[in-house]
Image (tube, rainbow, N blue to C red):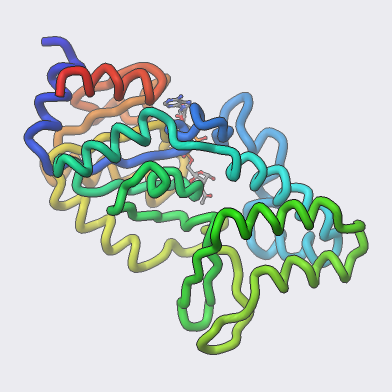
Length: 265
Ligand code: OAD
């Protein structure tokens, strides 16, 4: 049988959970992390993705971190959901997709209209309180304004640090300084999101893995857990990351593959 038609049939039975990585946002203009053009080729993750080192660099050489923030957020802010994001949202509205579990922090699943999104690595438009867990969402226009102002700030150490810290603000409940709601390397994943994800892995009938290299744990174990619970595993990627357990591997760009599947639904 045509593999796209087979996947469409499985999806039409419902109980679908979609698990996404950076590959799904590639067609929205956001670079992936690994690979030749990946973000970690240009920015050393031991400096930009580990909290102690990022904080140390921010306090000693703030412009090094603010330049990264400016570049990264300019890309995020100009990104729009891809056809793949939009089709997944339509499938949720049709009652076929139960939820999306994403490693991405770009908010594009929500922008596409998905309501059930489990963000296991956080969200770039949120800040949170490490003391009481309070989360505050920032409006995209507000973030855009902050980035524009940050670009025009002179590279003076203390004013730059103060400007960034003031933007993040303090917890409205316990007055602790807020930090970005992004999971850095070596940090614990948000417990509520993980409990929710684990439940979805147990319940799903079809598990679609899209655009992830499977290089980061515990996320990389999710396809195996879904498979163990009896789910039919579909992988969409340029090359397979979970060949050993895929029931179907569909090679290609996420949007093209989703459009092909959708033509049979
Ligand atoms: P990676 O950069 O590791 O992998 C991206 C995957 O997307 C690769 O498997 C590519 O083959 C695939 N890909 C690229 N373009 C694609 C396209 N147009 N359509 C479909 N697939 C495509 O990104 P992730 O696996 O998401 O963690 O990385 C996982 C985590 O590592 C991230 O969430 C981040 C990073 O460090 C944290 O920030 C904690």
